Length: 192
Image (cartoon, rainbow, N blue to C red; front, side, top):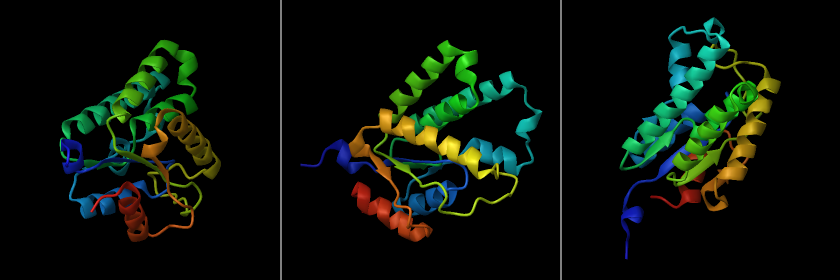
């Protein structure tokens, strides 16, 4: 007998450092599943000419917190599936990578708790591999590969710790084409 959970479309989060192909893959998978994409807000800002360098440390912390909350709210509002071009845990990773845990330990705990609770409602978290695709210097991504490896390592660690193994999937490094990646996800999570 099908349950309500079986009938609804999946809630999928894509994660990884900048330049691993999240946005392209999110669009591809969302199209295949007929669900909306929850876009990364920072990407849209950067494409519109925003510079992170104009922010104070406090403003950047607030922005990370706000973007995490906005993603959590957007995911909660999607009753029939989505593909997200980030997960709430990504914002925790950025928070940690920027050293904000030392500045605000109480807010760090609250951010982590909220991110973990939100991600529990997601059907799958797909970790895209670092270093497979060329890291473009396009004004959207920070092109230092070692900075991105640092972020990737923290993201992967948080995912391993807080996402149950049956919902956590690591994209094979040999896959770099969006259609092949999409097919792998669809087969892996058992939809269509």
